[in-house]
Image (cartoon, rainbow, N blue to C red; front, side):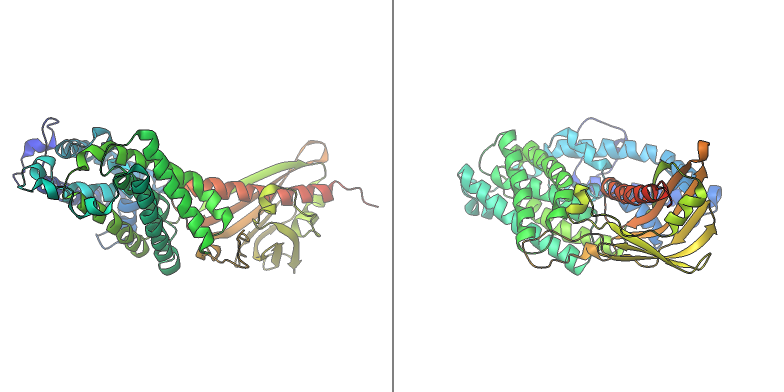
Length: 464
């Protein structure tokens, strides 16, 4: 290992794993302390390597709040030279492994970049491997004797091994560690697609279409296994499917891109072991240092043909709603049934009854007839799972989608009408947060409209 300063800007040539690891650790150390310096000098923020908030920022790169934007944009600007150097080193490292250079994109992907850096720092270069005096009869190692030569047999083995691995990983992550994070929804499907293709193409080159078919077949059968072994319900599997198939396809594409460089290499088993061990390792890291929990907001509104004073009475409480017509509620997502209130003014407690139980909502602001704001101290289960079994209760039904507060705002409109606006602030403990927010925002918006339309219908009724 001979690190040189020119390693940091030279695009040509290759770099060995020891040099790559050396520069990676050194540059991270410099960047970490530069960020600490900027935080103290410019923003009066002090933190150390033992500060969980700082570690969450470096590991998971979650969305920022408005108040934090100036601070983190400054850190982003300071990171640009390091991103450039990291890209240069990674391109040269990929060249030494004879892997496609477009894989450098994984250097910028949260979670996957950790696995990617680990692989590049551990695997020997192609020249390093090719110069070993290994007899040709042993070039394929143990894996060569296990994996069938035929395309069908190797595909069957690949799918079987990775489905079993996936079921074990999901059980560890959700039942033991109770985490629904990057490792489950990004790391695991990527690894499944990646390794299934490498097993499938171990003896001979396979086409891109067939590699993607094996990768996605692995994802599909893993989902069927989760349903059959009562580890998940059908609704959540359907919601997770677009992300899982997309990430699994990316993993399959990467496997297709590097299949030629691993074939006939005795040390290719290192990559299989590293990938399989990396998933539980990242799960443990995610459990110890969970990503930041963003507070999300959903706002819905409609116009009611009635004055605010009349609308207010139906906002505070309302009678039984008719059965839902929306498909998402018929599929099992919890929906509002009625609302009751005990008391009046600040300190009163509103109970919004859902199909799975009540939301308990102490009133924080009672500004009749303009604003009703409340906190939420109790949340019911967010859904009833579809399952072939009598009852399935995965961990995400307990506190993984939590409403924290809500409000109704009534704004006088022209001709005695009212703009009725409902807002919910909530957390969800599912990552990547941006993907799951698409679904959760949609569900909460549908809940809002069910309530707002009921208030509109009651308020516009003519009084006898």
